[in-house]
Image (cartoon, rainbow, N blue to C red; front, side, top):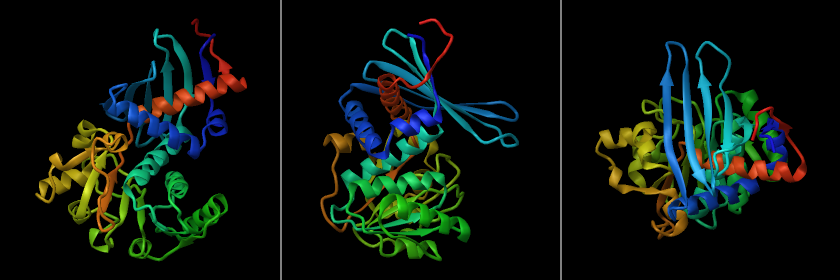
Length: 319
């Protein structure tokens, strides 16, 4: 069979947030048990653009996500290339939606293993496209009855709340400040492009779980040092990647408020190799940077489903 070209439509038709939660949790367990491999994001630059590559191996398949960023050009486009165990190309997949869904799913998995089981209120900072899957995933794994959302643009915030209320079936309400979104929350999600913190640790009440998912740059912070300092558990996806990309944690280390020895791998938490919360008063933090393993696992699921459904366009590449 020739490799398949799979579009954004193929992805959104075959991969739901519910599916992605299972896929990411299974991949995390495989990583903890040595049945999967992940490689930290690699970057290469020209004078005007940058390519980023995330590679992984999972369930007898290998692949990588690539995307380019050019400040003066069009927005980033994402692609996953998937290969079988013999090195034959299986698919080239448009991966904007795939990345959105798997990022939300990673936060959902972290919420499932770290948040209090009775969590009912979700606070969201950020109203972009990526924030939608953050909200949806948390609603899937905890009995959330309301979401409070802050974003600087009122019109965008109102649209987000309308769309997500209809999608989740719970009231999603806009508030005027980030602190209002967080003050009564049991779970907090940040998904912004901020360079400086949008979440202050002093706002968090005991027992809160935080998914910080918006930044993967060493010189940017989405949550402040106090958030990291107060966290009893800080989970990351890949420690080597966090060392160079997590501005939140790097700042905490530089200010001697936290140290890398305190980090847990999300995969180890899922597998029971690292502790989960031990009291309802603990604050927990998931620093989401996005790893290639989630992309390859989700792409493999999409490919198999598309083959079953007869979706995709064969590429003129010999197998």
